[in-house]
Image (tube, rainbow, N blue to C red; front, side):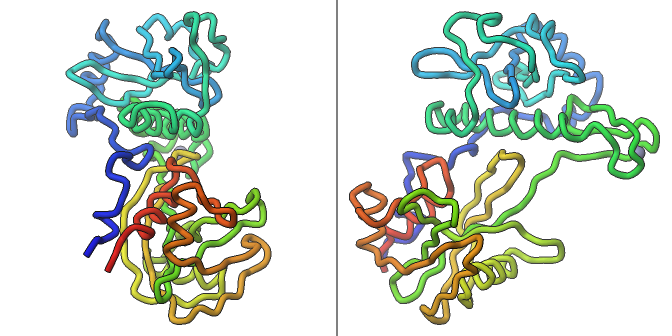
Length: 308
Ligand SMILES: [Zn+2]
């Protein structure tokens, strides 16, 4: 028997996972320790302009710079501590006014979706953390409780309100994305805005007061009119656009009757394993699935090659 786990693409980890940087559990929250990291002349800084990361080389790599780049910080920006690698501190910085030629020939600012398919996996993991944190700080300058300005503390692990002292924590927004199967076939949906034959798994945000299982059941019924049971967790992926956690599940439909909502989802159809394998292998004329940076690709691929 080949399970989903056996059939997964083991050579290609989920994009934005596998960040190799280490955050010391206690010290990273101590101001003096964080200051020592900032004072370390070996410190490495990742510049981000409008959330695009600075990379260099024909086969792009993150273009880490030294502390001189701090002279080009955008207004209100500061070095966000990411973690250490072999004792060397790593930071992300917003440098919104910086032009690539100011930081070296052969460098460019590139968006994270593009880079997720180009960088080595550990660098994609760092990029996801950096993008999510830099974006969160830029959008949380005021206290949600009293409206006063907030300031960053603990190297950017938190923000604190200067008036009411409330602590604000970086957001993670959980979403569910699920395989829906029925007697050897898989339900794949085409979003109203999707190009050509592109189909994918159903997905949606969790609502307050909902479990993962309840969110899966609700979303599948809302979008496709299908009732599912036996919801199981499979795997998950951070998705820093801006701060989602994609929770990958599978579920079993009680029947193959489908009624799409007609607005968000244009159509949803059942595909057998041969059809899905053809799509994974890029040789289907009727079915096109998302690329390998998306968890949907991995869920669909694992399903296609598992065997009972
Ligand atoms: Zn406040």
